[in-house]
Amino acid sequence: MQAYFDRIAITLSCVCVVHCIALPIVASFIPLFAATLNHGSALHEFWFHYFILIFILPFSILAIILGYRRHRQILPAIIAAVGLSILVFTSVFAGTLISNHVIPHEGETWLTISGGIVHAIGHIMNLVATSNMRLSCANQ
Image 1 (cartoon, one colour):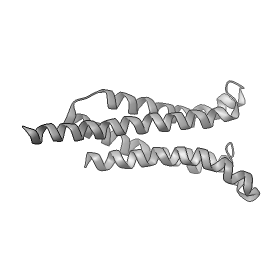
Image 2: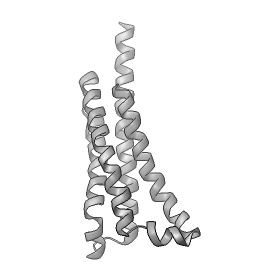
Image 3: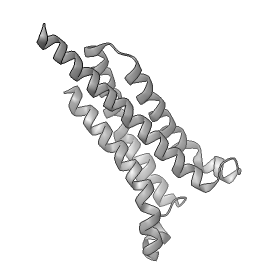
Image 4: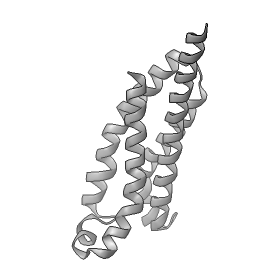
């Protein structure tokens, strides 16, 4: 069950990364989408960043807790939590940071990509730790 949640969390993090990379490319080729779905529009902010966090948070937390209960390694949880924190921070505060000229507009994309990658790495580590624990139990 925990491996299932880890895989969902990894997939959702990868969706974030693909979204951040693909959206500017798609938007540059399709002016209609650029007008409604580009970074910074209210529709984009709600429908993607906040909406996907509603799914990422519970799957991530559940996967990490279930994994930790099995393998008792804290590092995957810490790394996943750092990535998740970057994603949440960026979703909540990027608009303010951009409007106050603290980060450039591209900074939101880079923060989101970084958070998604770090988050996915934490879940991959969680899967590996659980798998290693199962193998060591099977060999005993």
